[in-house]
Length: 87
Image (cartoon, rainbow, N blue to C red; front, side):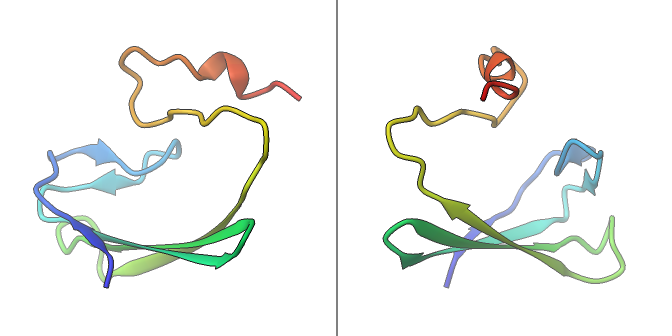
C-alpha cells in the first residue's frame, strides 16, 4: 500500500530536469522506515500520456539530527534556496 496521488495539472514538472507530468498521471509513494536513521522511499509514476510505461525511482533518506526540515515543494514564496549550498 502507498500514498496515491491523481488529478494533476497538465504540464507540471516532476523534477528540476523538467520531466513532465500530465493530468492523466498517477503517482504512488511508498515510504518505509528501514531502521532508526533511514527511510526507504519508492515513487512510481504511471502516466500513459507522457511516458510509454510506468517507471519507479528508489531513494534513501538519512536522518540529520539538530537541523531544520527544508520545504522544497513549490517555488511560490520559496525560502530554502539560500540554504541549499550551506555546509
